[in-house]
Structure formats: C-alpha cells, structure tokens
Amino acid sequence: MKRIFVLIFLFAFCARAQEASSDTSIVNVEQKESQILTFVSWPFLHIIQPTVEFLIYPVIPPLIYLSREDIIEKGANLITYGERKQITFYPVINASLGSSANIGFSYWHKDIFLEDDNIFFSPHHYINGDWDAAMRYKKSRILGTSFYSRWGANYREYGNNSFRNSEGVKYFFADSSVTLVSGFGFNLSGGWELEFNVSGNFNRFDFPSLEDTIMGGEYVSNRGFYRNFETYPLTLTLLYNSLDEPYSATRGNKFSVSYSYVPVSSYSDTKDHNYHVAESRFVNYLLLGNKSYAMTVAESNANREKLMNLSFSEAIEMLNPINVKEVIFDRRVLITQLKARYMIEEHKDKAPFVAMSKLGGNFPLRAYADGFFTGAIVAGLSNEYRWPIDRYADMLIFNEYGIYSDDYGHLSSFNLRNSYGFGFRVRTPKLFISRFALAFHGLQGISVILTTKSEYD
Image (cartoon, rainbow, N blue to C red; front, side, top):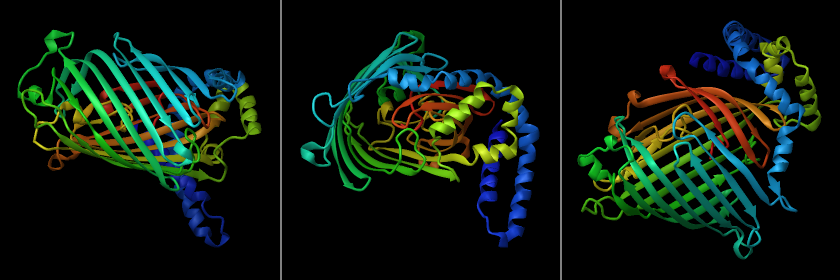
C-alpha cells in the first residue's frame, strides 16, 4: 500500500513535468518526459487502478447523493443563523476506535458583545462517559488599531486518561484540570503578527478508575502523576499567514515560531520542575496545473450531472492515466507541513509529564492517536495532495513522517514513524465541515478517521 502512494506522487509530478513546456524547440526533452510518464503509468494501470477499482465503488453512491441533493449547500445554510450569518452552530463528531470517540457541538458568534469580536464554545462527550469543554473569546481592532486580545478556558473531566512515555510504557490517571488563557497581539506588517499569552494550568491528577493500572516509582513522582500542581506558561509567538482562503487554500503559507517559559508549582515536595519550550510550524500550499482550483458553478453542475448517471465502467475510465492527468492532475494542490517542538528541562527528568512533546494525530501522523508517541523532541513532515470533485468537496492522498526522542543524542531511524492514506473532505471557503480518511501505518493496521476537525489546525 505504501508503494502505491509513492507511485501516485511520482505520477503526479511526472504529469506536471510533461505539461511544463510547450516550446517546440525542445522536442527531445518532451519525448523523454513522455517516456518517463509512460514508464510511471504502467504500475498505475496494472497495479494501482485495480486496487482503486475495488475501493472507489462503495464511495460513488453517497457522493452522487450529496451532489444531486445539494446537501453541502443546504447543510452550510442550515448551521448559520442571524441577519448577517454571524452565528454558526453545528454538531461535532470524532469517530475513532476506543474511548477517544466523542460527540458534541460548536457554537460561533461574531459581534456578540462588541464590533469585531467573536466567541466560541464547544463541549464534547466521550464514549466512555468522559467530557470536556472549551471556550474562547477574541476582540479584534481595539480602538481601531491592529491590536487584538484573547481569553480562553478549558475544563476536562476524564476518569481514565492516559500517557505513553518514549519507551512505550502507558500510565493511566484521572484528570480534572482547568486551563485559563489570556493574551494580546498586533499586526507587524502584511501578514506578520506578534502575540503574547499567559496561561494558568490547574492540573488535578488522581488515581484512575481502573486500580490495577496504578504505577509507582521515581518516574511517577518526578513527572507529577497522581499529583495536584499548577503551571504558568508565558509564551511569545511570531506568526505569518498569506493563505488565500482559510479552509480551501490553494496558495500561500502559514508560519509560526514560539518560545515558552513555564514555571511549575511544587509537587512531590520539590520545586525543580520548571521547563522551556521552543515550537515551530510551516505550512505551504502550492497550486499545480493550468486551471483555477475552485470549480465554477457551471463546472460543478456539469460534474454533478455526470455523477448522477455514472456507471461503474465510467467511474473506472476516469482513472485512466490520461484522463487523470487532464482532469484530476490539472487542478490540484500540494500541501507540505513541517512541525517541530523541543522541551528543555531546567533539571533533568524533573519536568511534569504534561510538558512532553506529543507525536500523532495532526502532528502529523494521522494513522496514530493524538500523543501516541512522546518525547522531549518531536518533529514531523506531512505531504498532502488534493483535487476537487465538487465546489465543496476534495479528494486527497497523504504521506507523513514523524520522529521523537528524549534528547538529540538518541534521535535515530528507530524512532521514525510513517503514516499514509487517502480520503475526502467537505468544506466551504469559509467553513470546514468534515473529513473522512483511511490512514495506514505499516503492518500495524488501519485507522478510520471521521471528524469535524480540520487537518492543519
């Protein structure tokens, strides 16, 4: 399966190379590029296409129904309210195996108290009875300037939360913690912003409901398991954003780099738990092909008419490499994300476990649960390839790598992990609705993702 996705990426770039030049004076170069395309297309025709034939057919009927009944447009209108569409209320579904599956709702309200302000509230209830809630408020354009301020609060009530250390040992604990955040920022120039935040994390960790999972030892006491303590992160962040759209971006970059100093209150009769965090992220959106990525209304309607009467043989014919090159690969976006986080302890092995960097989920291994791997250092590279199948829907394939370690000296290929898969996402230019994906990680199995959370939050 992993080789299939590598071949698809190779085919995409070869297709791009073939169309890159129209100068008749370099016929030999074009012939070589055509030969390369033919060579790369062979496994696509004889290996990939039969596989996709099996996978794609169950997806066609629901896509036809969504297109024919205009479900996406109706759904977007159904969840927005107010004279200026300033209120958004929609259900939240995060389906996954195990206790992390949850449901809830999200509520957005713009200009609720003052002009240019907004509030967000979202509670979640988990399949095992746990729950949490988050609330955020932001006021922009204070006194007509670029200054903005933000406040936030989070509460979680988890009866059996868990943490997996860098050696794979899993610790279980009850979690009833509160986080309060306050900050401000301003525009420096263009898309550049500078932001400062002060947080208070009131951690309340107790013994889990499953008493046979309680662990002891020096690691437990040093890292703050089954303890009550507070952390007070002070964070300075430099941000840049030049995306053309928030949820259907085709061009531009997002960049952030931050430094945090985190004082920690006393626990286990010691006060030497302070730590520092450096974190960065870079996301690039590159539009490929000769057409605008967004479908026009006419193109979308024509595509829907085609889908309404699409037969199985016609669906498979769409996967012909020539058709793929002219239709799919002529209208595509390549997204590359780089992320890294480095936690530095003031006293070795004394920082609380909540300080550890986490790898998994959107950072950036989608085939693994959030925080499946932890260490003082984590870094990841994610590549995603998208093409539109409707005005509000994209198909995608992705390939991601992540690495973790307790220090630079122990970084090695042994701690390198890979995740790859395919799926589709439903969104409008201003609102993300949902995404579905099948993610794989070697021979360890498959992860099914159905969520209302976007990929690159």
